Length: 428
Image (cartoon, rainbow, N blue to C red; front, side, top):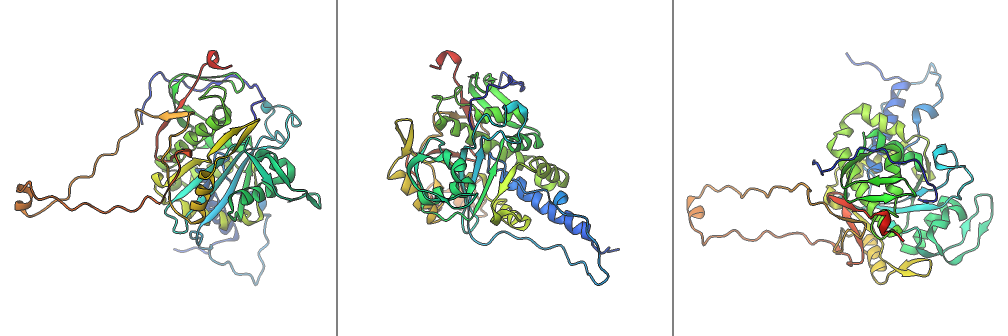
């Protein structure tokens, strides 16, 4: 998101060291609440994969008071299961100040740019998922897009991807990414600053690790090495910062956002949030009113079914990746053939395996928890244990799926990383 704003200073807690880690008939009101809680579940699960904080609309507010008719019967609460097949959903974060807190500046201080553009892909068998980020300065061809006020806009051969939201709205961003990747994307959502702030606060803060001090005057982010639990405004500014980390580019900012998203997923999982209806409800309420959903997503049932498809995926099977790019004047362009290879693997529904680094914005966390090695299988035959020449046959392992080019940076939700900050003295 744009960093033109110089906000108030960061006030998060700084640590000097890294710490680890009889049956009644249901009424219409009961049905409404049940539907809302299903939608709330979708908020929590899907938002874990989106810095833009995917949210359902507030059903409890949108449903008007009902009148029960004499011949009307109350049906059962609908049963919701995982969505059939795979999912492609585009998630964009807008830098628009319209309707946002005054701390972000006047409503007319910016346009409406999609400074965060991410594709969520869930595999057909719901065994893995990926979140693929597109840099805001990526030059792309923009197809002809419908004008929200009628008619259509002409196609353009090369413009930055973050202009698509202001050019033709969310529908234009989707059309552009479809043309760029060759994928069909039936679902889309747009979030603004306040949604990100609310989600981080609703979970009680998100822990982030800083390896080297971050100093960014543009976002007011000043963080010493160690672990910091960020929420609300501070969390948002951490996500927006770029001058104070890595090489100061938008590419390193994406690395930092992936670190935050991974931690958010782990936070939600470790806190048993999903088993606490009050927390689920609170998370849903926290992000209410901060989303624009495509018609295909404007349904509690659809949101919940997508969420259910995500909830059992192992953290190590959730891959955050940044599309491979090369520098050009004023921005970046897709790096071939690695770019096309990435989306061919997604189209083929192959699990993605990273072979590159986390990127220049983050480094591996030296204090990451280490999983204990599984204990050897017990045997009742003493001769096997006594004979050192007898060894177990190697266990066959599944193919890793599509091994991506080293130019594709990223991490899994199970990877612990730290921000590689930089000082003001290192910034040109």
